[in-house]
Length: 370
Image (cartoon, rainbow, N blue to C red; front, side):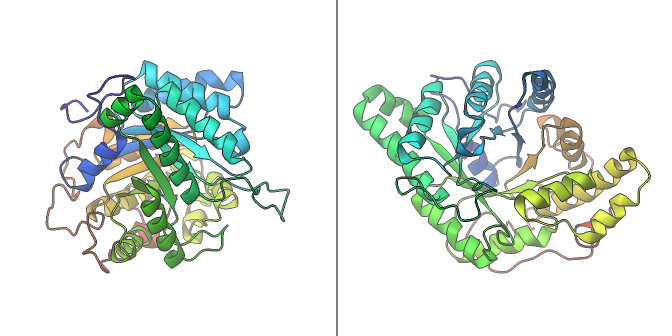
């Protein structure tokens, strides 16, 4: 960040603030909300130039971190490592490496963890991953890591073992602590059949296993986030919970995301987008909708926004501009964020939050962008 409040990542340096520090500062109200993006490694060589142009444009906004996805069963392992390594070596951004465990043995997962640590990675997003779609009766291997909670614990174990066996690794670990993010579903996970209460319980278990902060799966109503955070705080979850948002500019993308995650876009939003005459009109409407949603969760005290980009920079950057977070600056223009309005309840800062929710009279609920 231009004002010096942001960390820069340089392998081997001891003065680098971790992702957890950056999120924690926003979580405590000491800094602007964090900004971060999700990128997916290019699957074909011919897609690499476009991918890196998108990455360049996003990195230019000085995000607090960028997460890099990792295919189930290691399908994107080599490419993901290359992307994370290049971000580490060639940019000031803090990269988070996605890590999945579905379909892999414990030994395989430990090897992947060690590979990333050897690369200089100090931040992970621990995910179970999706079981094979063509195997409805699929079960985890007996020697496998069965859940993201177990994966968090394994990450901590591998790091502890490396530090115990190598004083230099222990010193580096003390200077740059391992950060582990986890995912959570505000309204329950449709694919897993969980309820919100069960997701709260799972998040508490991930926290107990060593998670540093959480990122929500996408949602379309601000109260989904605020009510979830309120219930999580009441249940003893104290780690920061970032709001994960997808710019709602492409109806086909929203329907595809439903297929992948089970999270359904509101029908009124899909109908409104489908009725518009061209992609530009859909983009304008979708950005207005998502800006309103983002501003509401910012006003409610989310420590940051994590944008699911699908490797498209325009919508992500327009979203940030709309909430005055573009270019790594809170900007001007009358923002009503929690930082500018300290009397707004901070729903992401402590267990005292028990039930505050947002009004339901906006685009975030009724689909009429402001």
